[in-house]
Every structure is written in structure tokens, then in C-alpha cells.
Length: 156
Image 1 (tube, helix red, strand yellow):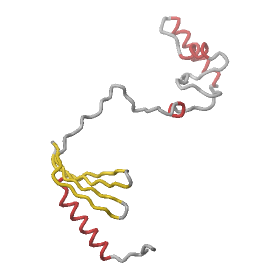
Image 2 (cartoon, rainbow, N blue to C red; image 1 turned 90 degrees about the vertical axis):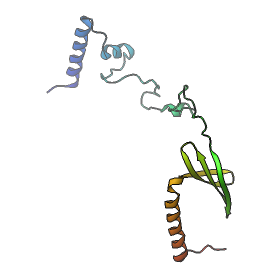
Image 3 (cartoon, helix red, strand yellow; image 1 turned 45 degrees about the vertical axis):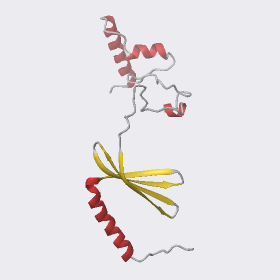
Image 4 (cartoon, rainbow, N blue to C red; image 1 turned 60 degrees about the vertical axis):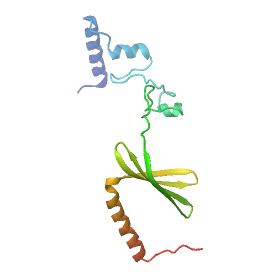
């Protein structure tokens, strides 16, 4: 049976032999120099993020609230795409405004439906090639809404 201490000694001897023939310094040797009071196993490395009293790890976003892992200083935003408005319309339903805009850009025509709720905007874009299918589904939903009775009518 092999015990942990004998494995450690074996790695230590192998590291010394490699170092004696000029094959660099091992992690085991480095760990003894960096942390003389604590032995490290061969795959441990000092954390670049630091440690609190040796037993808890914090993600960089916890240390810096402005941390963004996708930040790249060389990143450039995409140039805006030119869109021509062909037709637009607006409808207000309860407290929401819906803006329908038929537009054209270099990739083709599209319908942009924008929902405006007190200054917050959400949009969906439907390519013009799918408008007939979109209308077909919308007509089916309107028909079902008219046919199926309301289970919980709104109270006033």
C-alpha cells in the first residue's frame, strides 16, 4: 500500500533529479519556497485573485463591481445599418403603445414591432419573407380569442 507521504517523497526525488540534470524547477520546489508553512499538491497554484484567510474564494466581479469578463479594449461597435422607413403606424392599447414600422435595409425588408411602456422599449423584428406566416398565426389566435370564453373576467 502506498501512502501519501511516500508519494510526496517520490515526487520530491523526481523533481530533484530533473533539476540536477537541468530540466527546470518543479512546482513542488516552488511551493516549498512560496509557502514554507504549508505544503501544496502538485496541481495547486497560488490564486491570482487572492484568498481570505485561506479558505474562501471570491469571483473578480465580487471584488470589483465594474468587472466585465467580455470587456475587450480593442472592441469596436458595429457601424449602424441604414434603414429606410417605408410605412409606419401606431396603436395604443391600455397603457401600452405599439409602433409598427415597415423598413428596408441592405439585407431586405422587415417589420419592426416596438412596445413602449412608459419609456421602456422592447422590439421584435419579423423579416418580410415571414409576414404571411405571421399573419396566418395571428389570425388563428384572434379567432381562438373570439371563440373561447373568458374564464376570469377582469373586475372593475
